[in-house]
Length: 358
Image (cartoon, rainbow, N blue to C red; front, side, top):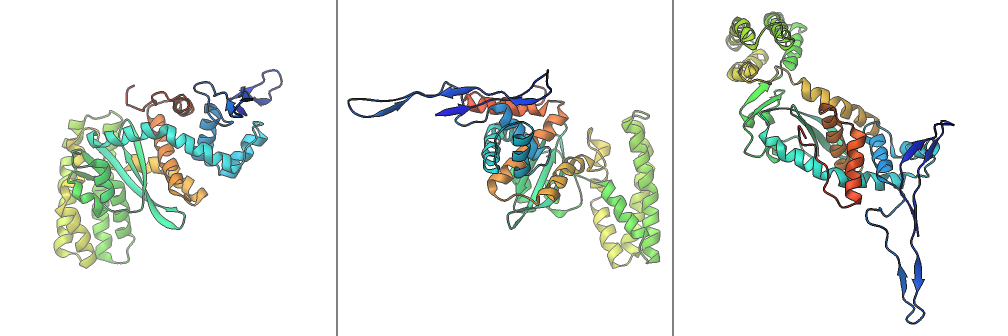
């Protein structure tokens, strides 16, 4: 039996990329007395198969980070790197990457309930013919993605458990309401107010303009605080009259607006504390842009791939997206980390983790 495990290397003199191949030959003997066949074992740490840790990590990143299909990944490895490959081999490497990164992924999931604030969002996906949802949980030091068959609050209960006491930055979807401490996204509200302005109804237009004016002032003061022009105390002082104006306009919509306007204004006014949590909690932003930005790469990948075809594929996607985004947040080299994880898996060593600050 022959097994090749190697990485890729460049030939400096010719510029040609060639595979670095290490070959192991397992000697096999047959006993002349009993006829039993005995084969020598592979050295410790040598994987069974032809792919080494760097090749496995590279193939995984081609599929997840660089949005290549399995066929395109196999073609790239064969045509550009001189590594014989077929789509079925890329599936094998995909599963190896998932297994290698699972300890790091599970560790991040376990750390979610202890975070002081999280940006959470979700986007529809497909697994084969079934509809699924891609959830993202964004904290300052790391990000977790999860693919689940539902958009219900049970996903939040699964990941945040009953110990989470932080603030959730989110849109106004009702599955978040049970968390209790929320910051509703003002970017979403701004779009809702613009929709009122664009409405043919004159009462809705006026209400939209009256809400849009303080909203723009809010974003202006938030930007000044974020870039250091004013302090948080200064921002809170400047936003005090803006807060009063917003709540006054909402109250007017509750009592004088038409049915549709009344419903929106009542919801916002009754939960007005969720509009201003960013004023009282350091690190909380008035928008949910953190999770929106984290989802952008995943949404582009979904549009190119049309989702996943199996549960194993979904686990690969949620694991790799979490590692890619967390490495970006922590300024880590994602290829080096994935390679180290695969190497640890092959040699049965403890898997590296993405513990913040380590």
